[in-house]
Length: 145
Image 1 (cartoon, rainbow, N blue to C red):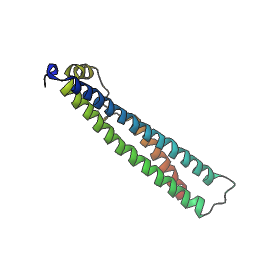
Image 2: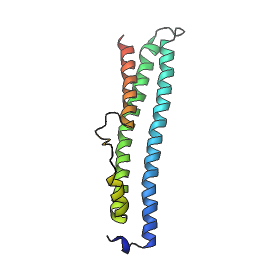
Image 3: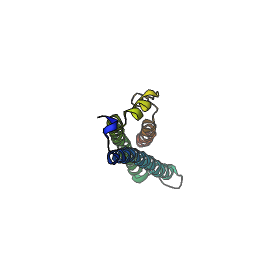
Image 4: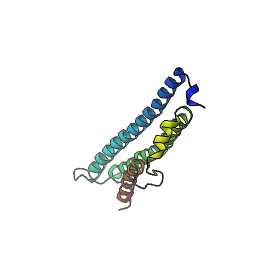
């Protein structure tokens, strides 16, 4: 599509659509971070109860709390994995809109080096997943020991 033949309404629609994709990405990443913070807080509190000298070792502290910790951290781990797929989808939509409606902007965007986040073992999503995996491992160890 020739950029000169794009109407002002289409340019406005492009701007809104492009901005919407990045707003959705921001919301997904914020939700993922909030979920991680809440679940890590709950897990930490559960570990504190489990290892507290005030609680007698019983089925609640030996099995129930670790199982709850494992379940909620698995949920958060899966949520992080799934939300990343949605983030990538919104990035692809924004890129496609740039290619069609603003080749010049797309050329600028593509000319700047970018971290290959899919190959980055320390990207934000993976770091959050690692934290949840550690919580799961600690909870499993508390059941086994």
